[in-house]
Amino acid sequence: MTLEVRKVVSYVEETRVEGGRQAGRPLLMVLSAAVLKNPWAGEPFTEDLRPEILRIAPPLGDLLVGEILKHTGSGDRVEGYGKAAVVGADGEVEHASALIHTLRFGNKYRNAVGGTSYLSFTNSRGAMGCPIVVPMMHKNDEGMRSHYLTVQATIADAPAADEVVVALGASVGGRPHHRIGDRYQDMREMGLDAAGKEAS
Image (cartoon, rainbow, N blue to C red; front, side):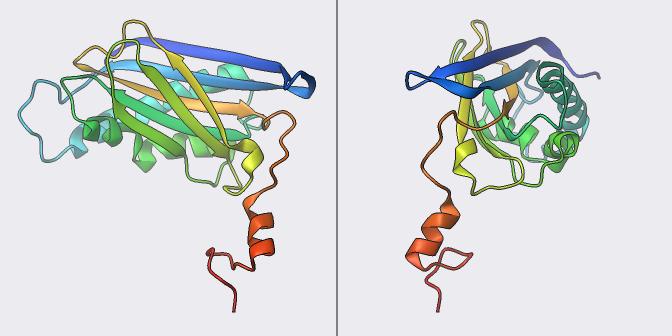
């Protein structure tokens, strides 16, 4: 059985002015999503999700990474990243989680963009037209608050009750005019160690 993708949707936004001021460079954010048949919808409770994860996650990763790179131009340009999945009413949130919380999916993206951070995520249940929300962070520095960003979009006819929407998000740059520092500055000021505990 091949990957049953009904449609692929990409949303691209470029912020040129923020807070009434011209951005130093425009912030490009991309969300690319695949609408696919939920392989477990309509089935009795499935204890072992692994066979379908192994079948679906790798080609789904390849598909969505290709879409992201098509809009960003290259993996090197991607600075922030994240992922999301939304399952329709006939599925479990676990079904959404299953397709994105596997290295067979996430590593496709990390490897393509040279990332080392974990992929921030959302996994939820929703109806047609619900927001697809992808939180992002810097691909190599989880404490760099300039790249704490969210890209979101809606798909008018997805997810249907028996579908899952799986998405990747990317940013080329951080927030324009970011000025809240990073978590390391807080740690130094508060006398905390790398684990966030009081340094002795």
